[in-house]
Image (cartoon, rainbow, N blue to C red; front, side, top):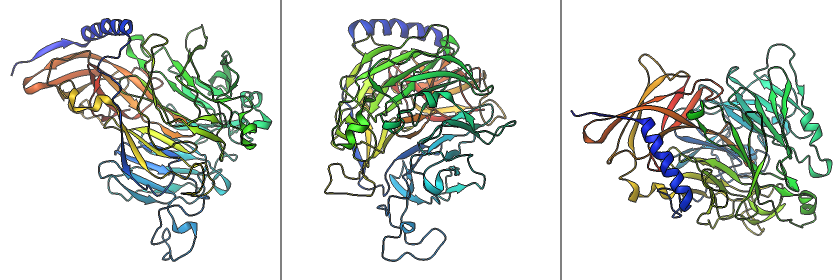
Length: 554
């Protein structure tokens, strides 16, 4: 069998040359605007207030439990008597698991209210879920994914220190636990499991400083990102800090993001860390914050006046010594949107509204057109407007990236009950997929197929800095080939908690017969660059991604 070895570094240099040319002409290689919408289900049964993709290719979807009966009626209560007629909420599901391959849902059981809660995946792939409302506000829950359709939610006897409603969660790799920050009328953070030493909760002055009493705080669901140096980026309302959570100390105070308006709930902008890259050893960390509500929007919305949302986005490098928000405008105003990083490194901005604020019936003018943001383009050429949907996705909607490359879009309910007609924005239970143009079969000659991850011998995963093999089939010569790893987020209220995209180092490519290619890739060097856990691994060739396979960094 003939084999040819190609340096991945050479391919990267060619990619940089093409990228520069691409910036001149203002086009993205291999990408156009032919994105399509597909209806998957007419009824998921529950509103997708929260959503997360597991490493078994299923999607956990859940709502609150206090919105009355959902549209998924059960035959029996959980481990209980047979359900009869009536509106007993215990006879309705409030969480489901969506099977991507079979395109169907099965009911899950929630014991307490998860309304406006938070979540993070742990290193073993389990979802650690915290907080909510009422009896659920101090609860700690786990969902351990399975392949036999028998897994379900479990609640721990141990509880959070205080009530956490509208709080955020972030995975801490060294502790294999999470930090939970903020909440309604809560200005503290704590750890799950609880840390050694003082048990907490711990005061966070940033939350006091950014609180707006007449706007429901305007600093709820703070934005959290883990920097590759191990510190936390915490953003609330318009201000942000770099925080050493181990020493409970503010390392840096960043400039206030420009603009007249808020970015945190209920103003509800959204944020991502732009892809981290091996070329700088994953040391450059750049955050992006987009959209939000105009000053006074929450109060105005209570009087049925819906102010225009914010159009601006800000990018800022949080590592190094020079920090400045670089601002640019989206094609239109937007709040309550989801931001997802695609395998190409582009950012999808989807769902939301153009006017108002988050909250019950507090927004108008749904944002039906997704935006594609291309970070490597020149300013003014980075945004592309995609094909609009006919389904409004406003308050309590969410979106996630699937391993097959589609974007799953669900939810939307600005009402405090399931109301399907007779209101401006009914409860939305339809499930959609947004299909990127790069999934079209006209790009199959470029698409890597049958991607397989080969772990080092006698290992159940890949350690930091370790080399591992990725095999796939390619019908043509490699073009600007790269290997990326994506940490799937927990999404709710326009936050994609723990979302992360890593461009891995590729040492070599070896071509065999019948299009077989073997690449040697290198895992990132530290747990703070790539927190342990399951990642979607994707091979991108000529701007066209493969379907993803799962890789576990340990």
